[in-house]
Length: 546
Image (cartoon, rainbow, N blue to C red; front, side, top):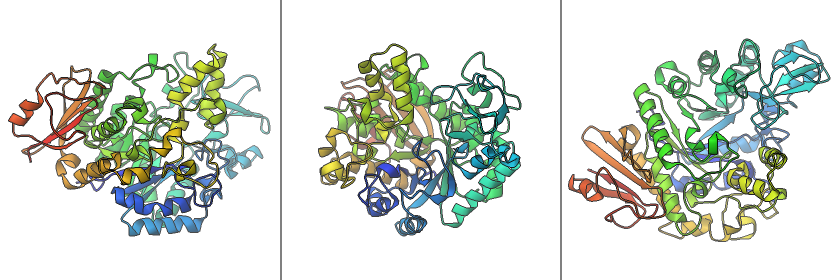
């Protein structure tokens, strides 16, 4: 068994996790303060999103120095204490490496603007007139993917914000610089790394207009990406560490290569196809109810496909870039607890390493903001303007942001019913939802039937039952548009997971619950106290023969 197959990762967005110094922003001291809570939950690794020196135009994903700590988060001494204290509790730390681009405030980019040719080769600069970008590619944050730098009379590529300049991975000096960053943190005692949009690092030999789309087909899973990753892992000495790559608009075939052991690239991969099933016509900014049938088909294709190719999935619903799963696929109201538990079981019992995003284990919901002034996310603010320019009313644009904004996942962790959800003694940088007085860690820990207690059970099951970590997976109920169901097998062992995605009772189509019980399977986990005749609203039933 690979040592990450039976592990669970918890994602921390430090800016919103816990504010220890009362300035309204989460910090490293706040993470240290809550390590006992994370150990109590039972997770194995903590992935922290970037806290490196940054102007914070994209909440730390615009890094100005990979070896320095942004003062708003703390000091290097606190990082070292965090590594040590986490280790004492059996928790490994995974740091987030943003290697596709740097901040335009990074010393490398500033030296490029000052005219140093060496550092201009660190980025993707192109000649051109000030009013004519090199290509028609679009930024993933809206607008063109090129920005003009008058200091040098050239355009530079930025697939994200204009303050995030894409690095030139074709330059071996750039690759060596980044390998040294990994060595630096490995020596500090880091146990793993998450690589941001890492499948975008290899750009084309020639840059041309995209007459069919926004340019992504030219740089996604690019021509040298696999050799670059193999070199990075080999030269930085991180082969034995837990690594996960965030893959943007990727393919199953590439993800098998990224994560199959023999290619020695990454331990596992994130893909986002399953989180687009509520995008009307494939457009993130057009709303529709989630298509559960498509969701099931995507899970089946990726789970069974990765299994066949010996790849490994990172399974997840939520992260700092996604709305809250319970608001999106479940029910914020009557069935919040039931649906949050069902969603947790659905991915935790699949083949892959599950990720919990802070607050998911207590069923935190979307923000519910009523004013654009409450938003902070650069993508959300950009798209509010775009939607209004396209003819949407302010109310219509706000309704779309309420469902889609990345700020939904970035609201402060809800620790208690105290002011500002116990996150801070000061008004936080982003306000928590009004429901924090009922939905918080303190209340969850006092409730034996809480979502938190259910997540503890899910984690224990993965640790204890090899079938969850190593068993084969096959999908059931393929024609049922209300249910996602699958079976895990390991030798003679069987585990069946049945998830109702509706707020009403639904029947199984292939076999009844009673049929499974007649085959010798018994209930090992569920979000109702017993096994009924059919699946009740948002019910999950887990059955096993041992």
